[in-house]
Image (cartoon, rainbow, N blue to C red; front, side, top):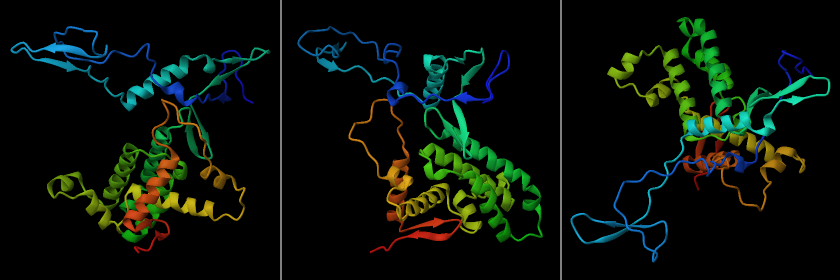
Length: 298
């Protein structure tokens, strides 16, 4: 273990994984919901949460409920959880008997994937996008070489940038915002390989769908991820060992309800979305193995 000593930082770090209720907003520090200033007369015959609004130009009495609190944005939630994680007792520095110490981190890398303390894949997805972007820059001479046919460039694009982009996506719990980020990288890269300028996109209305169709009908990120997740699901379910760990994890459940503050999107929901996509489109194109995930329309 490369632990810290004195002023030297610890290379060995711990990660604290809180319970789902830990991420819920603190009701004692939450701001009151905004509401309009109205003239009201409280009465005891109705609920304490209601008020009597007296119209200024009439004698009508209207019972009005208070406005709902605004929904917390993802950036605000992330900042609030990070601040709470950095200051909670569970993440304080561990000091050993010999004076050395071990610090806590919010993220760690395991098998090429970035795991976060809140079990949300946004950091891992952004890391994969950055890695794939660097690979696009490293292959600049390949994209600019006019002596290489477009089919070869297409195969290289699938083998390196797309493979790095979707590395570990079998376990991702993807929200629509994450799919949009993946699509932005794919469409930007396709336009780069096809040498389509932004002025052409604006003036000629060259859509993303048309760019994908020109580049050998490469699918979008939703179809790619669905194909890879379904391929993994099929391999796990066809495994002959009934005690195979992925098979047990896929079929495990608990009878307890999920607590408030839980993660909204889970890997199970992502797999269900992939299955629904297959059954609604009758074919999910696997960019690496062709149309490997198909069903009979009947």
